[in-house]
Image: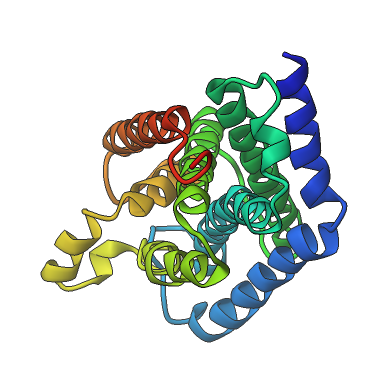
Length: 251
């Protein structure tokens, strides 16, 4: 377990040492989204009865920030290690693929949660929020960041240069998060796009997380939990297979 704790400590230290870039910057970005969208739409949009648009927006922004940063943590760490060559110092020690996976996953979850807490605290200045179901909120926060952290490991393993990682982030992660109901309810979309949204797993992460705040959601939270849980298990299994085989790491 010494190797696991050492790798986890190294991954936590890696993002914390540059917290202005990895924590403060995404918090400010989310705050800018809140100020702009709430200023433009507050008087025109009410998604749930009795819930102001600014309050509706906050859980989506918190979850979006957590997901993007969980992905960024594991993917950037792995691609940097591969390109600089220091990945060898993690492959040579007697570190099992399970310990390798757990260390990267927990560090990604930690960064996502820290950023999410930062966004939540800052947005409290602008709106008042009551958390009705904290357990649901915690479960979706950990599963959501776990999925994106795992996806980041896959992207880091697959990518051989920063361009490939940027393509993964710009053409998969960003569209999935922005088209997942962060800024709107899918019930405001035409029927075709509502059906398309239901194939987006990120929609279920954000909708379930939002249910933790307001006790209402676009779909049943049990369905969201099922989808998110299945995605986490499937992606974790794929990642463990890749790590065990040494795909693009040991060859």
